[in-house]
Amino acid sequence: TVTVPRATPESTPGVPAVPAPPAAKPSASRWGLLGALAAVVVLIVVGLVVFLGSGGGGPTRTTIGPRAVHVSARQAWTDTGIVLRPGDDVSITATGTVYPDAAFPQYAATPDGVPNHPDFRKSNVVGDVDHSGLIGRVGEAGAPFVVGHFDQFTAQAAGRLFLGVNDVGVENNAGAFDANVTVTRKR
Image (cartoon, rainbow, N blue to C red; front, side, top):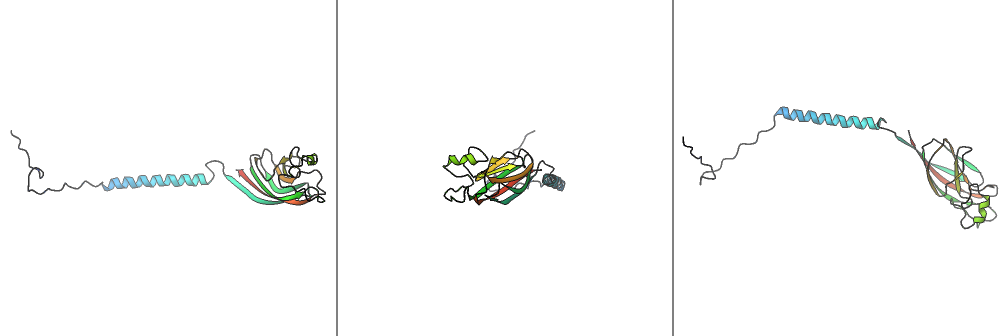
């Protein structure tokens, strides 16, 4: 047998090219399968969002505050009204002016204390820091700590948060600090 080569439009001058037949379209059953797969993916994603949003995905956080607290210079401790739990993240910012002796207004304390007067420290509640600054404690018997104009800490014990002035004798003081307290609690 002899094989005769077929003529193609490219090999035969003057013969118009015949377009190739269109590619076969996916069948309806293939589109149905892709649609069903897409629907399953959407359902899984929506389910995860609902599950995680409902607290099933781990600890959620609750924010308390910011709560404004006016700390009078004439009161040893001011109750913030916030009860802390161990693990609470606490942030405190403060402004204002306290006069550790109203008769001498030239000695003004910011929340960080009276600067450049280490001789005043002998009247401190919390030792070797500038006198009459903002301090705090957790619970009625908690150890006092320095807050200043800004403090951020994680509560180690449960109890009410108190703020005060770093001065053992508040009866002759004047002025006040204004603090904003924000607590972030993991549930």
